[in-house]
Image (tube, rainbow, N blue to C red; front, side, top):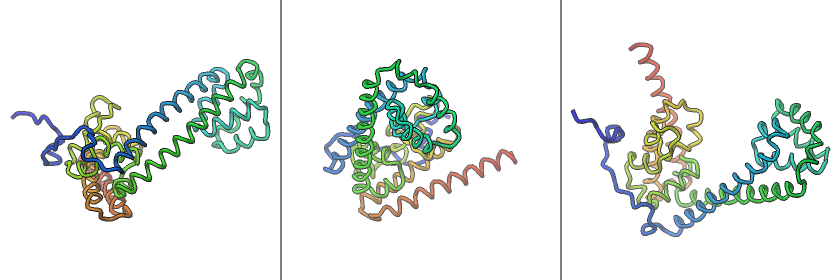
Length: 274
């Protein structure tokens, strides 16, 4: 028997629809607006990542605990600015806002590292921190604008998926109309995410969905398939202008979780009773 070249075909039992490679021909003004915002967001994230990496590199050897433990950019900026300005009151207030388990180690490290100020260019580092803070705020504002635009165009898709993923699908598919006509197997492979070479095609764009963070690596393809099926339904609902508040998208999201948990129970049952 000839092996099936597309392992997803059997699961979805639908014919593929060719993508239009994200051309603008079938896109409306809302979809083009989302694409512009998404591109701006990507550029801002690159800028934020570079500035964040540069600042962390300056302090990595001097303040290793702080650089390792404080991952949130707003907390890091406030912490380092207070440290550089020798503002003890603001510094302690920022430390109290961190998780309890890291407060004491960071407080001890910072209080014993005043010599660091003589090793770094304080004004130069403050300028970097200010730029990082501004870019990060702009990034958050752009993300909120994009999320709002996605919600206006495709409220059920936004309820089902993270805004980043919903916008990426709308852009790469060529618009809501094209996405609504695509079967689940096309949606799943719309944008490959090579987190793992063996799983890249099966995770597709859903490899970045936050829900997948708590799912075992071996079970993620199943979750991604269920999301693709739900996305196919949600995009059809949105194109038909039904459920404008996104209620069906939330129902689809819960349905994905229920079906996934059921599949895990069936898997465990087969393992206990082969």
